[in-house]
Structure formats: structure tokens, C-alpha cells
Length: 332
Ligand SMILES: [Fe+2]
Ligand SMILES: [Fe+2]
Image 1 (tube, rainbow, N blue to C red):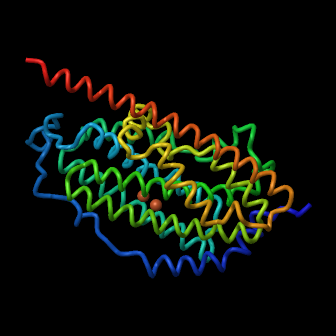
Image 2: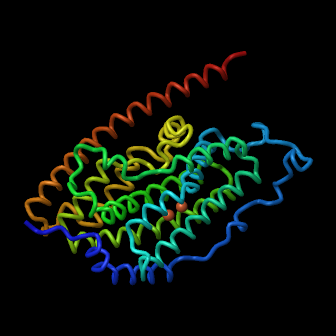
Image 3: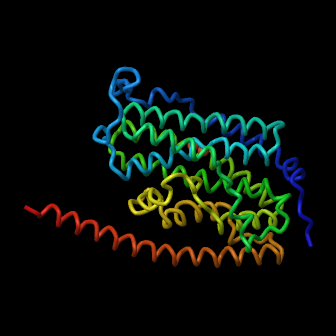
């Protein structure tokens, strides 16, 4: 049986790949400034400074757009949790350390821009937003919780799989947030918000490429071991906002209105990445990797069936809502 590489061995072996990908990222990343994406002339003081406090009638965003904006922002706000995940599993030396610092600084920009936009335009209740941020950040987010608690986890020794789990998780998570920000921009029906979220999505895409490339290199270096971590993550994936205030309600709204749903998760996030890694066509797995690949294949089959069920339920719910609206509209 092939010996598992330790976390330290993985980090040492992959350091040159990290270095070239940091350079690639820095050459592609665009510098932008949050203040350029916020319509400051729409702002005015709140009561504490002699103005008026927030009122729901001031928001120009739909209920769906508000739910999506708040969910996306609270996820960005929880950056310390994600920083911890990466910082604990990557080295702080060399290219690894450079990446962790740079990535954290870029992510922080996202939260700054979205919050400024929401508060200046009075799109959401700033008091409720601050309360939700306090709750969500105090609780933190543990991306590996489900993997640890899963009785089906492929990786037996979790101590040396932190890097692989992390890098697999953030690959899918960055792509998922890219999709979510992009679709949120569309439902806002405000060109200013759309431009800001398109800018943020472009960042998320570059982040995803860094992690996807690292994971690809890990697959080449330790195929069975990397595939086990990837399978654990795909089979236990949860959006990074899970557990935040109103998560269920907002998640349902977002899924129902095409901001992030199961079909998008499978077709636009999971499958493109697995295809890029050539997971189902590579021939460098041993019997151990082949077994895990079968588990992954079965899970994806189940996900496909769940998607079909989700779409039927969603279409029925939307039709019901449309009928209700028509009924109200036709009342004298
Ligand atoms: Fe972000
Ligand atoms: Fe990101």
C-alpha cells in the first residue's frame, strides 16, 4: 500500500507550485477600490447624527435580493473563520504565507464594498445586519465539522489531511461564492450593485483557480490521498453561510429564485472542477483510489436525482406563488 504523505511533506513538495501560482495570481489580479462601487450621494445620516433611521420602505431591493445580499455579506464577514482554516493548514513561510496574507486582504475588500453599498443605499436594516454579523462571527464557521462527524469520511487519519481537505473545500467554496455573487447582482436590478458584484465574482474566480491548481498538483503528487479528501468534501459540502441567522429561510429563497440551488451546485460548481481534475478518466489511482472514486460516482448519481426532485418542487412552489399573486391582483 502506498504510504500517505504527511502534511509537512505535502507542503514542501507543493511549495514550488504555490509559488508559481502566487505569481500567476498577482499578474492577473486587478487592483480596485471599494469606494468606487458605492453610490455615496444616495447616503444620509441616521438618527444618531440628526437624520432618520432605517425604514423598510427605503429599500429598493426585492426580498430575494435582500436575502441574498445579507447572506453573501455575512459570509464575507466571517473571514476570520476562513482565514483560520487556511492559516492553520498552510505554512506561514514562503509562498504559502504570501498567499494566505494576500488572499485574506482581497477577501476583506468584498465585505467592505458590500456593507458600504447596503448601508448607504438603505437596502437593508443596518441594526439587524449588525446583530446578525455579531452572532455569525461569534459562532464562527467550521468547514470541516461535517467531514469530522461523517461516518462515511474516506480519510481515516484526519490529522494529516488538513491541507488536502482545506484546499479541496475552498476550491468548491470560491466557485460557489462566485456563482452566488454573480446571480445576486442580477436580481438587484441596480447597475451599481451588479457592477460591484461582478467585480467581486471576478476575484472569487481567481481565488478558485489558485486552489484548483493546488488541488490538481496534490492529485498528481498523491492521487489516492487527494481523492479521498476531495470525496469527503464533495459528499459533505455545505455552503459557507450555513448556521447564520435566517440561513434556512434565506437559503430557500435563494434556491427558489436561481441564486444558488442544487442544480447550479452540481452543474456549475462540482462537475466543472471534477472534470478539470480529470477525476473520472485518470489512471493513476490504486485500488484504494478506485474504491473512493466509486463512492464519489454514487454520490453524484444521488445528487443528480436530488436535483430533479428539487426542480419539480421549486416549479410547483413558484406556480403556486404566481397563482396567489394573480388572485390578489384580480380582486376588485
Ligand atoms: Fe469573497
Ligand atoms: Fe474568494
